[in-house]
Length: 271
Image 1 (cartoon, rainbow, N blue to C red):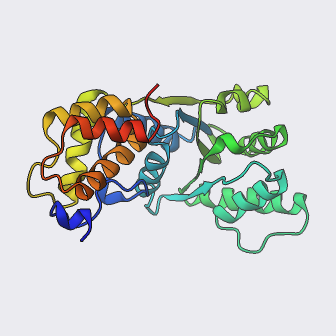
Image 2: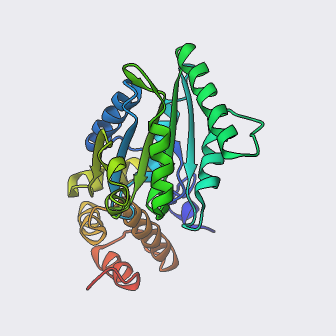
C-alpha cells in the first residue's frame, strides 16, 4: 500500500515536477504574467523575472509558454542546464527555437538567417518570443553581448524578438556584466514567497486536484507547514509529501503539528 491509497488519493499531490493540472493561480503570479504578456504583445525586447529558489519561476515560465501557444506567436522555452555554454551555442540554439531548420556554418550566415526569419514573422503579424529559464546560468559577458545583439534587430517602433529571462536574484549582477544590455531591460518582476493564507490555499488546492475526499491536514497542521516552509512553494511540496509519507508509515489517520515539526527538522529546515 502507498500513502496515496492510505489517504484515499488518486495520485501524489505534492510532486515538484511541473504539472499544469496542479497550477495554482496566485494573485501576485497572475499580475506578473499579465505584465509579461504586455511586454510580449508590445515587443519590448527584454523582460526579467527573478526570485529565490523554489518560488515558482519554472512553473510561471511553463504557464506563460502555454499562453503563447497561439498562431500569433512563434514561441519557445529554452532551459539552461549548466554554465559552460558558449555564445555560439546560444546563437545556434535561439536560431533553432525560432524555426530555422538548416543553419549556416558561419556566424554571419546564421545572423542573416535569423534576421530574415524574424522579418518573415514580423511581416506575417507574428511575434517571436523566447523564454529562458535558469538564465542565471548565463554567466559570461559574451553571452550577454549575444543577447544584446538580438535586441539590435528591430524595425521602426518595434523589436523583432522578445526575450523573457527567468532566474535567481544573482541574474541582476549577471546582466550588469553588459551595461548596455542591463539598460535595455524593459520590465523586471520579482517573485516572492506565499503568505500563510496563500500557502494553506495552495495545499488545499493540490489535495483537491489529487482527489482528496476528506480533510487530511487539519488547520493547525496547515499553519505549521506554512511556517516551516517559509511560504516557498517547492518547500511546501517537499514538507507535505514527507508528512504524508511519515503519517502513512506511522499509520496516523490524523496528522498533527508534532509530525510536521519532525519532518521539518529531519529536512534540515530549522535553524
